[in-house]
Length: 181
Image 1 (tube, rainbow, N blue to C red):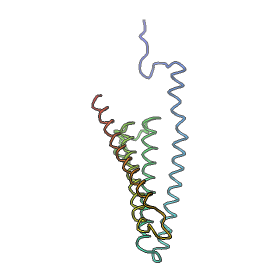
Image 2 (cartoon, rainbow, N blue to C red):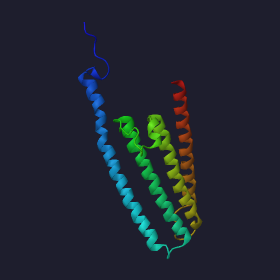
Image 3 (tube, one colour):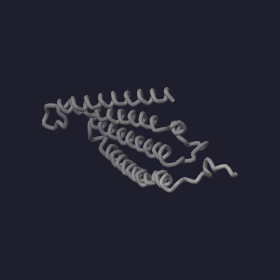
């Protein structure tokens, strides 16, 4: 009597095989995010050229706002890298980067929980940049060229605080689930 195959040699029934194979449908989504990242690179270069071209003719506050915009683009691009690399590695297939000198340190211990916490922290960072820009622009409240209002500043601060509370909640739940395992 021959024992039933186990591990990789075990044959899957058609439905589980289809369900497991459906993870590859995410590949076009990750490719789309790579294209979006290329758009952000283009936006960064365009803003950088704008900064260089206008540096002598604008004030320090305007330069600071442009630089904050550049930082915002970089942070969003970093978020995209985390989603693309971490999401693909977690939900689609291994990247096979073991012992590669450029492998990100965080990739060796990424899972869905870690990825959620990292994404929440990145969103807080992006929100912080937007809130800082709003605070800088708030000095113009009450003038004809004001782009923000007191109510707008209040709501952005409330939303940012909710992001922080949500991130703490996500991290806490992730820690609780890791402790139980």
